[in-house]
Image (cartoon, rainbow, N blue to C red; front, side, top):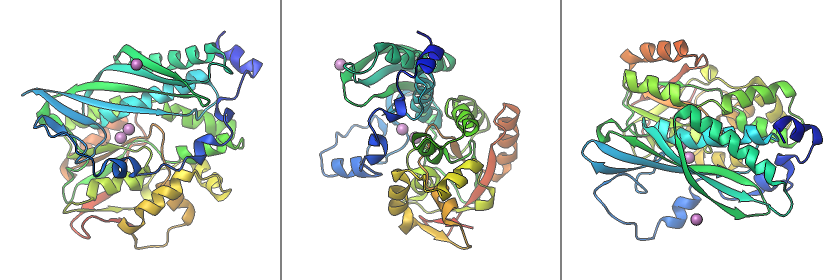
Length: 354
Ligand code: CO
Ligand code: CO
Ligand code: CO
């Protein structure tokens, strides 16, 4: 059965499999961190990036010029088409390796599947979508693990490699750096509108194109130019991830909200209340770090805190290299790449929204 016949037969709407389950979850930013906080972590000098300074992925040094990068990501369906869902989940799982400036090498499938109520062909189609992205990334699938679950979930664990000298962390930004964002915001809100069955076909197609696109090209460009810090925008939203760049540091970030790209539909749907629960959790978590110095509409704030699926990279690059990087990104087809703010001395550890 191919994906068209799956669609035509309306076998199942993946995003409606367990009504509301995806947005009812109460687990929020920092919960895993909290749960681990008093437990004795293993100390090892070869852990270059680990639980003590959480980043996009963990990095472990093997030799002086070789380290492995490890990351894992999986979630419930955000679109109804299984092949598309597979592609999005894989692009999203690979993204953390790209955000560190690494090269993904191998991956393993993670599957939770309601085998009693869902056709195995759906799983096969999801895995086929994932595999398509692994091929594009040049990553070998080397295994996986599956469990029966009432709610479908899919994702991958990904292992990459990097030279330990070349790790791009989320906390290397320097005063006067410029901040470049490579994909528009608003996928969380639009995905919520998809679940609520009000998203237009056009906006669905548009966000899917962004969610399936790998951050590989952007990562290659930033490695070539040389940058100070990077993170990918996912569950914590732009502001949540930006907070991680300045938390416990000597710097702050100033965003010019008029420059931040987002899908216009996201604002429309936010006005209709189609805001994922994660946005509120992100906003609650982030409020003590955010200062606004001009009037910013609550819908724009929803978008700035909107949890992204397979979002873009937020790159901190020195002023003299910013134009070169921007030119390179656009020449490589990342036309949405744009400067959205700068790194400032004061106030330290805060994000200012202008
Ligand atoms: Co990340
Ligand atoms: Co991740
Ligand atoms: Co196993």
